[in-house]
Image (cartoon, rainbow, N blue to C red; front, side, top):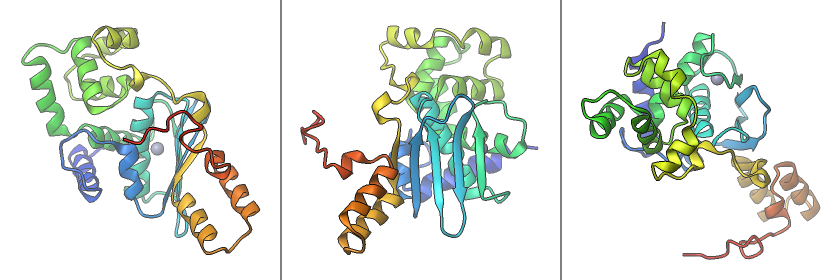
Length: 251
Ligand SMILES: [Zn+2]
């Protein structure tokens, strides 16, 4: 049986540990930089896998399927944070893209992710502000997912699980979200995958370690390049600076 109260508390706890308040929308990709020793890898993991978490005494690694939408990647990262910080079952999880997983452990991770991105209380407050007492329409659902930065499907599931939408609405609201969001004046970034050229990337601890090797002159420059290329960071290895990439404005 899912202990939703406990999962909401854990999600709040982790938000606070990472320096966030208990209610605001979060920039989860930037927040995880603060998780000690964590390496974050973006990689196209195929049709069925949303993310992977590996953790033991020496390694803390999360991989996210970068061919999923940006909103789904945010959800998936929050899901993997549950495995990293609260899951004692094993040191290795390969997580399904489906949002109705069978195992209780996976359902806990999904529920935690949902609370991490949209805490129970702040979702209620946002619903009151967005829809008042009216039943939730597609327009309201889009406003909520845009506010919390959550994928459309994850928001629909959350609203159904809290009895705020019917299962029938889940079916009828599942289509046409991108055009509806655009018509309502929103950016469609949430619904799009990472651009093809950026789908393989590594961030975090691994790069800090490579930089340490470089600074202490412990390995050859060729080996440093090799380590960077293994992590899909040819931009660092080959010194592709901001100017060359056409985004050189610092402001
Ligand atoms: Zn999982």
